[in-house]
Figure (cartoon, rainbow, N blue to C red):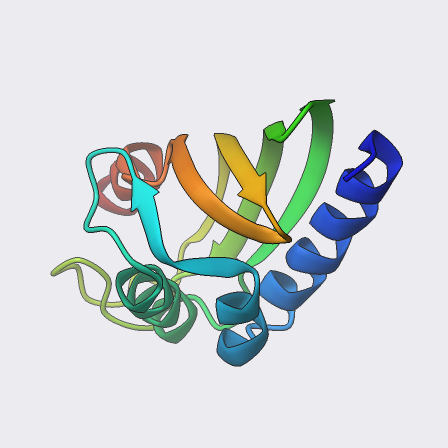
Length: 130
């Protein structure tokens, strides 16, 4: 993909995420997507997203910066939502959280094949406990 196509592709992916459309999110993932320090595969990715959306029904991401180089994306996002359900063993607090997220992705044939980033939710969990 050309850089402009990659930017459009990421916009479509982010839109699917912000709609909480798990089927659409899956369509952007390679079935065997590798995630650093997390379970691999599209099923694990979608399971993690579903858990997040159940706990934060108003969860949204906002793109701050996106860099494209060949088949790779580097993204800085802000994410926020209200903790309305259990998340990682923490009962709903009704707290509104706002976190920075960073990601590096490799995209091949319109699907994420590799991911590394801040998907461990450390900052988010700190705000919930806090």
